Image (cartoon, rainbow, N blue to C red; front, side):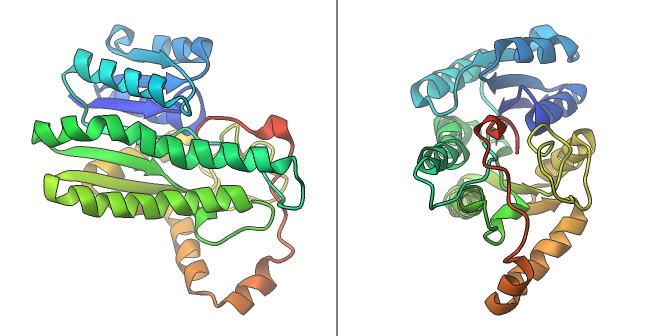
Amino acid sequence: MNRVFITGASSGLGAALAREYAARGATLGLVARRREALDALRAQLPHPERHLVYVLDVTDRAALGAAAVDFIARCGGADIVIACAGISVGTLTEYAEDMAVFDAIIATNVGATVATFAPFIATMKAQHTPCRLVGIGSVAGVRGLPGAGAYSASKAAVRVYCESLRLELKPHGIGVVTIAPGYIDTPMTKHNSYPMPFLMTPGRFAAKAVKTIAAGATYRVIPWQMGVVAKLLRLLPDVLYDLAFVNAPHKARTASNASKGAP
């Protein structure tokens, strides 16, 4: 039975992953800022008494570390840790007020991913059993998107960070998986005013993500159609990329659209 620790678990992808793992018999550590949402989620899961709830902000490293220590102590270790908390909101460098938003996105999407993984590594090394650390990237991190400089940069950073970590931990038998969602029908995408090709439900995403994690993949775009698009974007010369995306619609800057949930 897997012991799975998930941040950003109160909604979106985090909640969908929690439901999928609980249906498979896992014991969960559920992390988010909203107690009511976490309690409601736990009540809906099979064997709710089995799952632990931690109400905190993932940028509070001390609180996040304490939750990890408590989960390890009460569950005897951890098999899968998923850093799913994230902020998705547009930014424009020319606006001074967007600097604080930029800082918050980097702190949550990148810094909190590192802080989520760090407390579990020593325990996972000692377990000598298959373990996984899972970072949630995005197809938005494949190339820089106009109006989404902070978000694209943060998700590109998650991918490269996880790649470095994968090499560091491979000799210890700890797998590091990066999953890059395409467009998933979550609260974070509700405010997008532009077309979202290959839009996928959170439940379908979660089922595919869990299979990907179990298989020990290193990097996977879900759905696969967006993976094809991502590969093509990587190959596109800058001059052609610029022509294609210079007038692309921008992610909304409205502060109310910022949410620490699964991207």
